[in-house]
Amino acid sequence: MTTPFDPHCRACPRLAAHLDAVAAEHPDYHCRPVAPFGADDPGLLVVGLAPGLHGANATGRPFTGDHAGIMLYETLHRFGFASAPESRSAEDGLALRDCRITNAVKCLPPANKPTGTEVRTCRPFLAAELAGLRAGAVVLALGRVAHETTIAALGGRQKDHPFAHGHWHEPAGGPAVVDSYHCSRYNTQTRRLTPAMFDAVFESIRERLPAT
Image 1 (cartoon, rainbow, N blue to C red):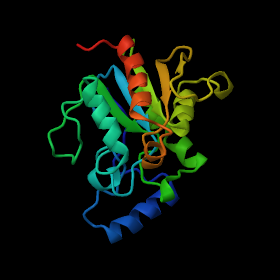
Image 2: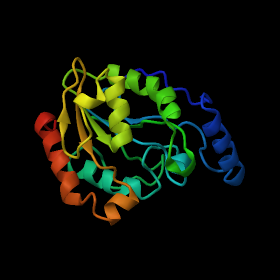
Image 3: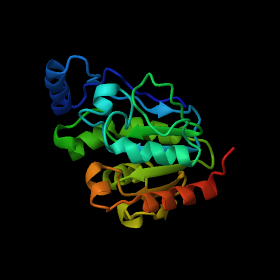
Image 4: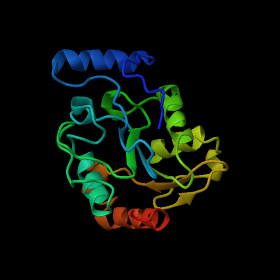
């Protein structure tokens, strides 16, 4: 998959300034846009929100180094999409199988809350990834922001595709999209998202993407 990902992008002034401030405090952190990770021609594209301060922003790999990645990688491994159940660092040898992980916003936002303008500015990167998916591929949107920007990038209308955990959407001319609550610390600890709920989403994905 060819994407216009730019590891030096500074198109969002607030995010660029925030990254500079974090880099000054943590000079060993990645503190740049975080590239998508995984297969070049995936059947499954997982779309998250944005890098976490001490997670992807530190390690340079999506959902790696913080709580949000625990359930995701365990589940990916259990359903045959990952070579290991834990993602510890960008150099740990973990590989994704028929799967790619990206974020709606590629840079760390303050308080983990990108603005609408920042989501829209970053959307062309996601749109290029979606356009490059092969026929029959599916998208897993983790959370409302990921869902809404994915639907927008596919040219769909939000009123026709409201976010709902476990619900499938079929935007005209685009890949199928399935929603899940985000696997954040808050959602998993409050049991808004349980392992059983997440497994049910992946079971529905496997029905469309049999393991190879």
